[in-house]
Image 1 (cartoon, rainbow, N blue to C red):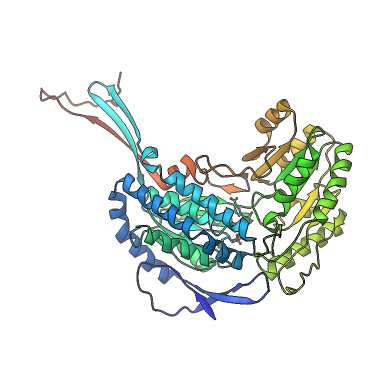
Image 2 (cartoon, rainbow, N blue to C red):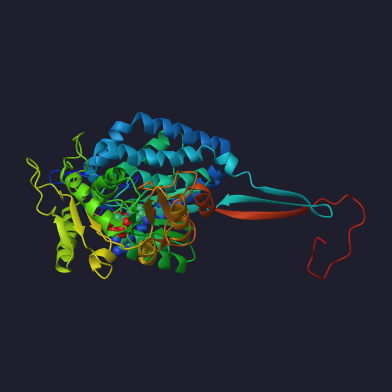
Length: 498
Ligand code: NAD
């Protein structure tokens, strides 16, 4: 069987003792196994990173940016191969896999401008003969722990900024789709990145714990489900690291009575069902405001959902492919049953979906619930599948309160033609990323990505300036150059610039 391994800066010939299966979601079989690393392997990777990092930090930022330019060109040249590899393990359709990698590349494009970003601050004449300047230095060795659902984009969010700012970076990708991160690390080497600056260690909880406890890893960026994000945050911080830990989501799409419903149905179809709903910025909850809006929206949604084409990830006509594993398919179908048991109306049932010729594939048909209420656990928890839940609201106020009161606060969207309502909504809603007539408001790379409440632990976001702040520490120098005259008397009070 094909074996997927680590990408290290040294020869490692100790045979692995543990493996995890990597499935073929289109057909249901095991296609490969990935070696799971342990603390001893991590020690070696950290030692290699420690050796390489000072030299890389000393490379001037313009040269570091050149590696980013080279890498971008290499990824573009290999886009097809990368997208097929990604789809074969994740199950998302090829066009969506290309989007996954492209969104990561946009962060690399941001990193191409790193010299500008790292210029620092300077105050001339802050006091008599005194100048002050601040600049950012790399934290040293950083680590990233990533989820299965964006095996291209999220490793690039983290590694791009960490490396461009002069750190060495160790990535532990999801064991469910581990191949693309290894390929990206190979392309970074080809782009001119020195050995040891980016390494990939494969593993599960054992490796995550080793990363969190390792004294030489100074910062950990995590993306995954909320309970694990919370655990990672607490354990990493207790070990003295800076930690940013992004968690789960349950994003609401609020539809005002004046919205263009045809456009809303188009937007919702893609945002709720694209990538089989396995996106932290999916829109799994729709909130029509007013009875009339609910009736009209439901009437248009049902045929649109029934017309969705579920297919294998290489089917260019398919709207979405299989989910990642049989266990995840089962979990989604269990949630659908829970919704029924809790009294929601199951309008379109995607359970038991079989694709002809791929009967063992991990497919879930599109599912629609109506009359979902806020007390239901199927509403409160993340399902992470192709399931859209309609929660009816009587007023704008009620609609704003729903995402605001929800435990998650990743993304939210409002569909309206009313600028005042949109402005109020954006200002008041208790959620980190807001779309106004934009169903999936993932911010561009030079802004920053991060949710609120149980969608993120820690206080800095991914990429943009927040990412730069996370992967660097600021140093401030206050300097005076004596003019050669008599030196001042000793000062025993705190110096001021007055
Ligand atoms: P997950 O939490 O199962 O796994 C994420 C990472 O944690 C993986 O690398 C995994 O190996 C590791 N891990 C798993 N169990 C662990 C444990 N017990 N202890 C320590 N580490 C452990 O998440 P997933 O299923 O791979 O990804 C889907 C989740 O990620 C969803 O909840 C989704 O909303 C979330 N997500 C969030 C964002 C965001 O930016 N907020 C983005 C993408 C995905």
